[in-house]
Image 1 (cartoon, one colour):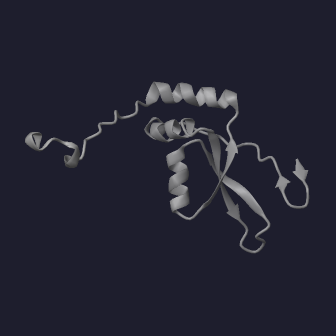
Image 2 (tube, rainbow, N blue to C red):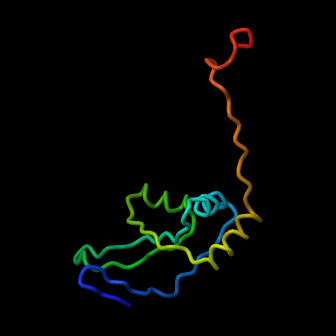
Image 3 (cartoon, rainbow, N blue to C red):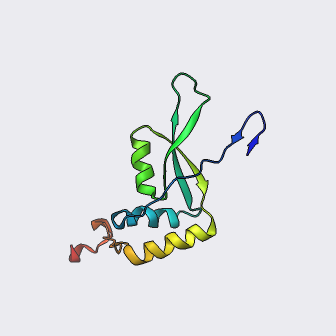
Length: 114
């Protein structure tokens, strides 16, 4: 699509993104991150480091984290509004965040109530 000598922008069609109910937290975290994104894991040709191709595309923050923990290269691409809406519907139907229960440290509790 574009090559300015420093950055080459190429389209890689044909990636399917499948949503799984047990990845709901990862979708939720992506949606609430401020700027939801596609996470793209790349493979780099060991013989020619200038040659790389996308291997996995996901919208799960947790899955991207697992890939990064495995020392994979993961980049982000902004998620279009229509895909964001589709992902939000899925997350709303399949994930409920755990309510946060905050326990006050003992130092904040009156001595007679400890």
